[in-house]
Length: 280
Image (cartoon, rainbow, N blue to C red; front, side):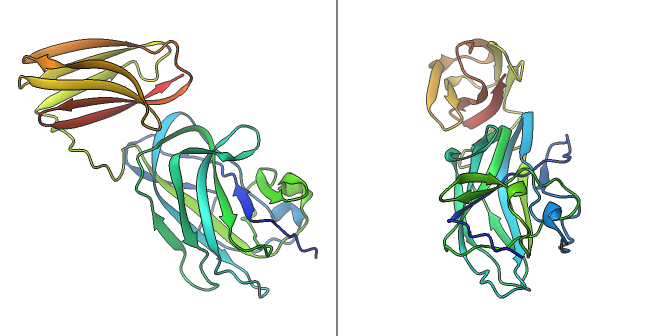
């Protein structure tokens, strides 16, 4: 058995095998049977994971659940930094998506998994991965469920760079990771308006160039309508004026925008409504 010495970074790129199209919370799980630790008996079962692909969908991260077992005496109470990063054929540790990063400590052998809540409204879509950076310089042992494919797990080796799992021989241990995501923003500080007071429609979504925005104002007052990118940088101000009661229509031309997630934000005297849109 050969020990694999890692620098501090291990990138686990996970695959969304299936997910519900219904609104609400759902777990994005690596592997098939999340609750089964099990142990592999050879190289092909040692490093197993693939990346998530939410093309055409938008999600918000709510929590991370992590579990690992290291039966051969290697310390497994190690501080870990996680990041949600872009994935473009290989791990991109430096291409963090918005402010999606945090810390947790790897649980000790035989204790329940670590459940880390995430309060961040950065939207996630398309191809992405979760990257884990371990504080120690020791090798960390893993074993994946035998039901998945091994060629999308990545390790960082200081003298080589990113290395596919298929180039690493058997590494003992057990490991699980899953993400709780939602269709709705989480941890918001905004006061969302009641549907019976105001309404905001944005279509089409996803869009190619132009977006039609309609707003029914049941109470006359000052409104602000703005477009932001995924990290909160203003793109365009569509309205900043007093409007009477009634329906108001706006047109946003996003033909020059790059593909990705954008937010339509409406602020009135009563509160705020935010709508996420996807530029194809």
